[in-house]
Amino acid sequence: MPATRFDYYAKLTIYQYVVLVTLTKEARMRYDYVRQFSQEEFRRLSGVLPETFEKMLEILRTAKARRQQEQKHRGGRPPELSLEDMLLVALEYLREYRTMFHIAGSYQVSESACWRALRWVENTLIKEGTFALPGKKALLKSDVEYTLVVVDATETPIERPKKNSGGSIRVRKSGIR
Image (cartoon, rainbow, N blue to C red; front, top):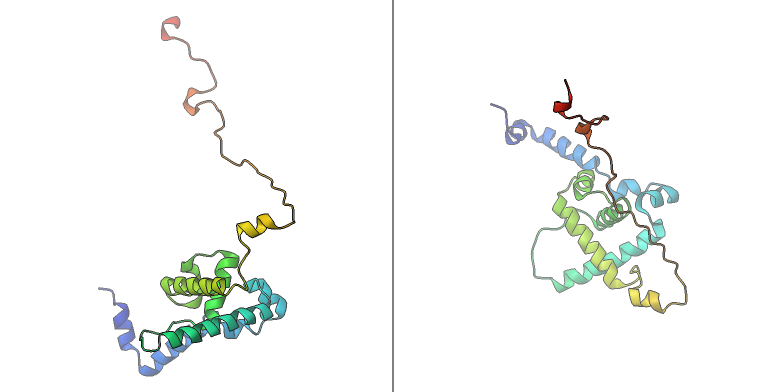
């Protein structure tokens, strides 16, 4: 009978467990590691410059402080990711369009924690308005003239002979002697 994961952790000493948890936490790609990158490497990873990242982070910090004051008496578990990591998760998702499963694996959190972080970061930045895109009406009112190119890329079946018909014309059996 195979041992369960609980049996494995139960046999570890306290020291071994602390080392295991420390190693898994250090293996995560976190902001502490990413902030050591050069400006170009940071932009290549996240899609924004470090200055823009800091502006976004400041907006998230003020929103978090406002939310904590409004919900002062409510309890709950704190988020698994720091604000910096939440923003990195959102930027990584928007830039690379990876699945939540893969991003969660990179940060060693659950998919739902990634989804909550992404949704909160997006909603907060959109509400603030600094990083929101102009709406459809604003684009129509602008003096810039846009050229629209439409490409029809629908799939159409190619007419080919049936595979079982072969390359020859069949003759009636009565014509064969």
